Image (tube, rainbow, N blue to C red; front, side, top):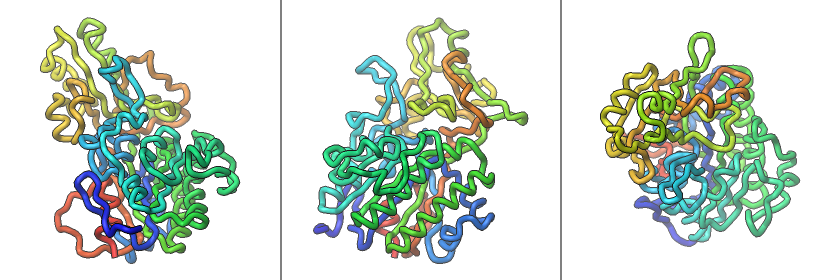
Amino acid sequence: MNPATVSVNGRTYRSPERPLVVVCVDGCEPEYINQAIASGRAPFIAALREKGTCLTADCVVPSFTNPNNLSIVTGAPPAVHGICGNYFWDKDAGAEVMMNDPKYLRAGTILAAFAGAGAKVAVVTAKDKLRALLGHKMSGICFSSERAAEATMAANGIDGVPAMVGMAVPSVYSAELSEFVFAAGVKLMERHKPDVMYLSTTDYVQHKVAPGVGVANDFYAMMDRYLGKLDAMGATIVLTADHGMNAKTDAFGRPNIVFLQDVLDRAYEPGTTRVILPITDPYVVHHGALGSFATVYLSPPVAAGDAAARIASLPGIDLVLPRAAACARFELPEDRVGDLVVVSERLTVIGTSHERHDLSGLDAPLRSHGGVSEQRVPLIANRLANALPPGRRWRNFDAFDLALNHLQ
């Protein structure tokens, strides 16, 4: 690379002196790592307590995949980059749509900036829903595990990915989809030697099982092995998460769900309220499109104060805020948020109408995310840091700042 620094969204990053790998582990509640270490299954990560940097950070709320991955790669909250959910109400289109089109992105990424400065950049994400956003205006390698067999030089900067990785393309509902990400990362480091690499997994395992359960420890043991390989190749590694994960059930394992659209339709004329669930994406089998964050659009004659009071009185609801207050607190773009923002408490999720959620695919007690209760995530590096600012509130979107501006 030529420039000594790159500036993106008001922040300046030093160019990497050695290969940098930033890893976003989807759904990584910190206790998953604690339990894997305690079981002896994650020796590489365990050693970082002494020879690395181990912090706890806050993710973006809503604690969902798209807003947090984009926050990490832009170094900024959704108020800057515009991606405030996996799904939203597009007023211009007059429709509920997926927020995975780069046209919704309002800021450049650190990845694109480094690529533009001459760095070799590679991105591997588990699900294809993120690929176009992460790779927006970025020259280099960018593909998903989900569509790895379809990768071409023209579209992805690489072809023959399954042969390179030595794995068949896994099911989108599997731990192996994330393993493919790590295996690809190791092969890319061996063969292409990127200066900057971003790896993003899927939370299939975390939706299925709690920290410390055998399947979870198996997953983190797998991850630990690949991270050790990247470390042995001389890479700087920073690991964080897009969000945590919690059980959303009662004592008998039954889902705790507030079907908010049903509540509002009983209280007001149907069609005068619209509940949007930003967790919604094409991969709903493991969570039924149920999360702990919702936004509500209101039409006359429904008064915001009356609707807010009604929602706040419901069991399981933790927070109801008007748009301006919610966007100020959670750093969200006001034009992409409803009149009210609703956040449920730790053990509860929010649905729209009962008939719109298919829970038949759930083969384990419901675990999900989206609220403040899933905001704490790990921020771990394989190198010691220089003196860190005292009292700083670390965010998951500080990953590149930590890696490039603070590590030894």
